[in-house]
Image (cartoon, rainbow, N blue to C red; front, side):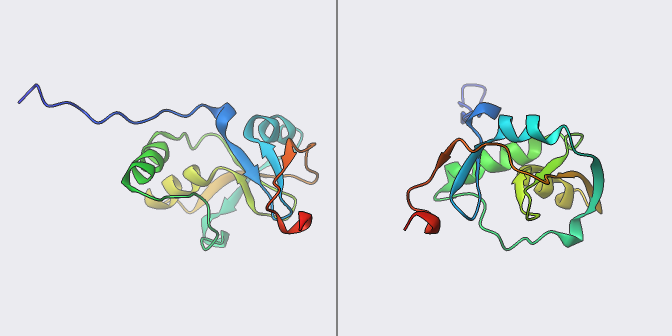
Length: 128
């Protein structure tokens, strides 16, 4: 039975993560993390997070496995980042892990201003 292959799971680097706000502005996760360092970290109740927001495009089992693995591997010592409106800009995998583990709070940073955006999505409502 040792000759049964394992299923490979695609790895994602931090540089590949982006956040698109409701106006269609797109920010790299690395830029958000760097910008967030000027703001304080606080404990945010997980019960106050809106879980109805569409977060990831999961079209098949491969996509689901990818995100499940990221939730499992994520480190809760890193705070989630909330945009200027309080929406999660970085850290959805951490939120999932914290909830599954039965945590009540998660470390968070709320941005008061946004860094310069990387691009604007053409399909956003702002650009129609």
